Amino acid sequence: MDVREKYEAFKALVTERKAEFEALMDFVENETSYLTAPASTRFHLSREGGLLEHSVNVCENMLKLRAALAPEVTEESCVITALLHDLGKAGMPGHPLYIPNQPTAKQKQYGYGPSVPYRTTEKLTYLSVPVRSLYLISAHFPLTEEEAQAIVYHDGQYVEDNRSVATKECPLLFLLQYADSWSCFVTERKQR
Ligand SMILES: [Fe+2]
Image (cartoon, rainbow, N blue to C red):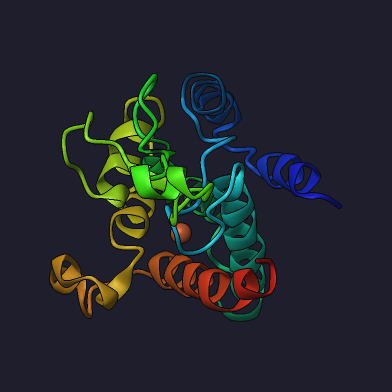
């Protein structure tokens, strides 16, 4: 199965809040750059469609972790948080967060492209990626508290802002955090 087929199959696992999820994904796919955005400016999957590839990788790994460690967590919560934890990387409707980088004057002179494929736009008010994800999703979809926690704190203790959640993590957050790390640092290193 290619990325797009996996993506469609994962979305079909959301059944309890199907209508709300369809409305959310209609917004995400048609009004934001989610389907075309890169996953980062220079690190993992910094190419068109990289964010979708990353989201699908996280979903695939998260469902495996869930099956092995926490079958009591719903597949639906895994799919929603995995596919949309990095939605903030799509920026706002009409304003992608990551925009194609331009070569410097010197790079142009010698016929080189930019050293980094994308850069972060200055046009948006600062929000961290997880907070922007929550902001965008919440306007269209009724997340559970656990889903909100998983999305906001998905970088775990890598990020200093997340100190407050230490020892208070729900299983869904751990599944997302581990699946995200595994995807970035193992799966996607092989997909470069
Ligand atoms: Fe991620």
